[in-house]
Length: 418
Figure 1 (cartoon, rainbow, N blue to C red):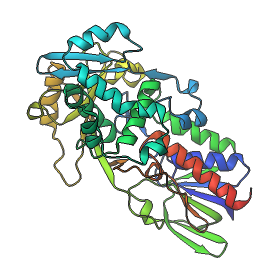
Figure 2: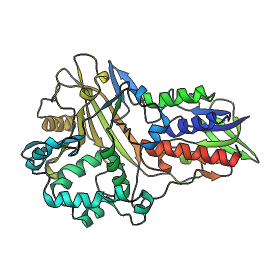
Figure 3: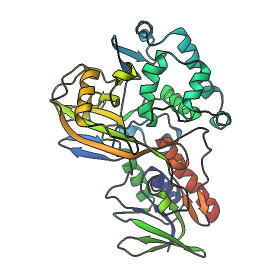
Figure 4: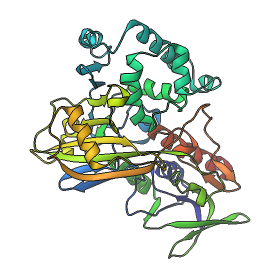
């Protein structure tokens, strides 16, 4: 019999297992897949490193700094800014404090006027002056919050809306304003980037830390039921012997958590990422590029970047890796390859028809939805001796997944009297 069985070796499950094992508890982690990581996976395809969907890692996340050795990840950082395809050409906006010399170009772009700048500051300032739980008390949707702040011009329609659509995986402005404020604050404070060996390097490091603390991680082991009998919880394993433990933490993704634990199925938003290889890069810039033209002229892509400019290790020598991310509407029509290539050609002002398609990632449950008003993180314990962790219990981010794993571990430790 074990002290704790953790179901799921994604970020929340691994972080929980580390905390418990380092406190001396006997922990077994069950993972249905053939590798750890959950949604944070990286595959080698024709010499390219392809993450499961376009992802970035923000070292400003407090839970990330507590969880992994960032230096060991050899982070490659994106430039802090964005390029915008407009009806007049290409404009570039950079972090004004980190790139003060870019301010004249920003003002000349026509994308930032005084009214917009003041309204944006009015909306964002509370993220630096008031704690998130306080802001969540009078939370509203992002769309309503921007309207109330007076943010209505091109900074909103041509820059923020297309950029944030790829961050929160929805374009209707229904996401919590308080949640988006927190994300933008982290963007302002950190330098998001990618581990040199791919996003999977982060969960791999967590798994190594868990094993060093003598936690056991079983891959290819799918939990199919949780039954409680007094002080003992039994976890059924498909095709294998059931495990018995004092407590169980369900740390599976939002798409399957309700199958094991008595919690409602979380609503999610989907993303689709296309990975292309090219012999010549369409631009020398490593900045993320979005479409700021009128809605009628836009295509399905919410962001695109030459990833190998930021992380050369993502592509073999002499070749370049280009990502294009689209929204994946639930029940709607996903973008097709011809449409994506056409939009890429417009965004990059380059011939994209000859780029090699390496892979398309359709991720219907890419992120838990975060509608307004923003809810406080849910308590980990859902029934006696059964706990749930994951970004769907906290915030739809790497920060939320790690923090939820930590919270679940603390609840187990307190209940177990360790």
